[in-house]
Image 1 (cartoon, each protein chain N blue to C red):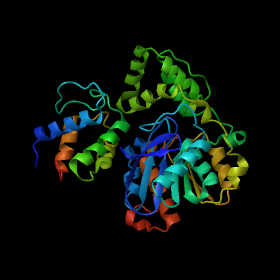
Image 2 (tube, chains in turn blue, purple):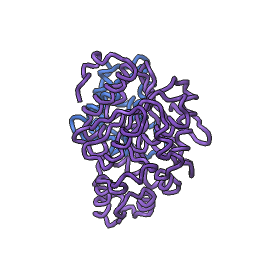
Image 3 (cartoon, rainbow over the protein chains, first blue to last red):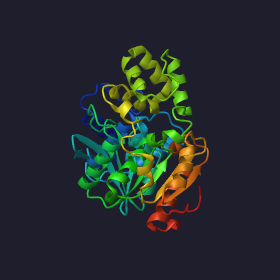
Length: 94
Length: 290
């Protein structure tokens, strides 16, 4: 299983590659919020999910993950939550 | 990104699952993320090939200056359908997405197997709809904008909504972003982008989808209308005059059923699609529930 630091690094790479024109903070950590801190919107999360699937080399249950967040009333998503999700769904190709 | 070129524009889409084709069509100012976050796309993908796309001007699709009537968007659908090699599809359309879906059934019947409407208002039925322009949802938006000193008017006016957000100071816009919160921010940010388009006026145009054209649609239609919908007269008209229409009320919803009452909406869509396609409902474990 990839360590959380490794996944966070990969995740940060995919976020920057997916939205190359955005002015993201220099450094991020597991508490960084996708909406509030990175300024992403819901449709951009869908696009991010698609890019993560490409990087991970497999279909990811990203929609289930997003619906689960909404079901429990989450108002934002921390990178740490996404890291755990990705650790639970390891890549076939990195 | 998965995209298709259609006519003069480019549409972003997502696809999942395998089986009979189902296409999800969102409302004005929304985008395909609503189907992902509500879980409908996931729920349907167990037995259907589900395609969700962003209407022109919305989400990640291109934003041309013109061409936002239901007629033009029905043609967009026809071209998307052809480009993706879909079979005749069941369209699930929310609000204006339902208008586009019905217009597609009228203009491109060979691409459509049936339509599931969610709380759609049809400009061509304005004469039978006493609540046109008086949606509770619009009043909520109006009250929220009033908190930052912006008046939107009593009746639904998308053009004004787009222009007011485009003209708003950055400070007021930020205040609104804070009010709407993380999940509403994406919706808010899309509004000023549509100010330079004809979307505001076009989406309320009849555009050829008259009452007579609606009556001529032979496809099966499911009219899911919300318990607190402003458009229940439309639901009654559809059930009375369409050749093959079943109507159902989604409880505890007021125009955004897929979010207001996700479980009941998802169950109803699945149950009706299973009925129309002959898919065994038991496999979903929720047949007959709503």
